[in-house]
Image 1: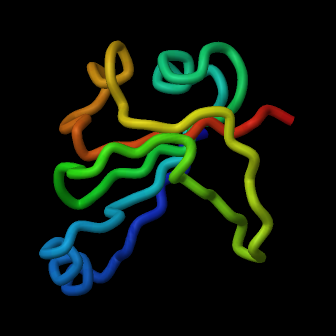
Image 2 (image 1 turned 30 degrees about the vertical axis):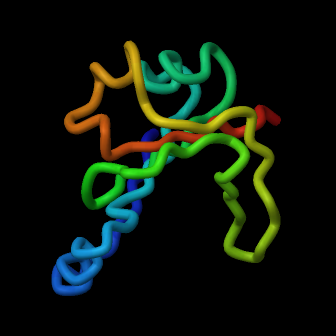
Length: 103
C-alpha cells in the first residue's frame, strides 16, 4: 500500500510555492514498480515531491529522515529520480528519493 502525505491547506501551499518546498511525501512499499526501479528487490522508498523543479542536486550526504519523535531512519541511498524510475513519474525533476535500510 502506497501512503501519500501532503498539506491540505491550498493557501499555505501557494505561499510556499514561491520559495519551493515539499509538496508531498510518498512511502512506496517493497515490490512496487518505482521501488524496484530505485532500490531493487528490498527496502522501501521515500519519495519527496517538491513544489517546483529542484535547483540543487541532493545526495545521501545531505538527506536526513527522522521519525516523529526524532529517531533517525537509516538510509541506503538518496538522490534525484532518473532512468527507468523517472519514466514512471510525471515531472521527475521535482522528485528526490531515499531508500530505507531493510529491516
